[in-house]
Image (cartoon, rainbow, N blue to C red; front, top):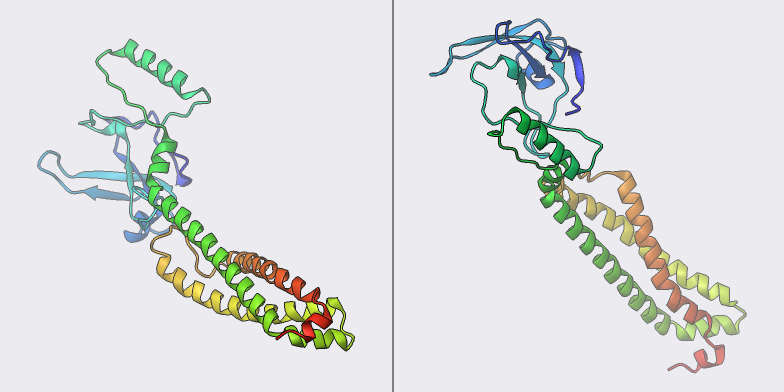
Length: 268
């Protein structure tokens, strides 16, 4: 499965039904039992059950912590036992098979090989990628919905800024005419409009960043791996929204730049 072996060894052909029972444990198991960072050579016991007596296992390997059922669970103690040492092996066994061949060809070859051993063995196949994908359905759905509503919010904000800026330009038409009559250049009018819009945008981005961190804290439970204080995400969002906002402000600002001074002085 690609789990990192930190110390000791893997199971091998010497681990048989007649040899001393061995086990591989993860970091959490070694930590919770107080076995230290190198638990190799220590033993632990599994209590007796109605069908099996108490058993003792020697730790021969230490592996990294992994998630067992889903990505949301916390790391927990896990013990791996050698299947070759089971006195009552499970009749249903799962194998992970890696192959560079196409799925259909791999399945056909495996069925043929198993049939040569025993035609009574039943097989079922499931691509591991499908298992991972099915486990992330909820997270992918939430990510897509969040992305959609985020884009929708950005579009609404851009339209709102366009409307506000257009209204401000209309309110200041007389002022613009006077400025241009007194010698202001078109680029000066454009700079004035964009500067006012940039000031509003800066306040909005600062308040939006603060609110987004607070909201992301609540959304952390719904989105796996979400970091509310990730600076890269915040900066990218602020740059994207800033670009959209300035683009929305540029159109009315450019219209103000083209106002005829005589028309502007007679406005209202």
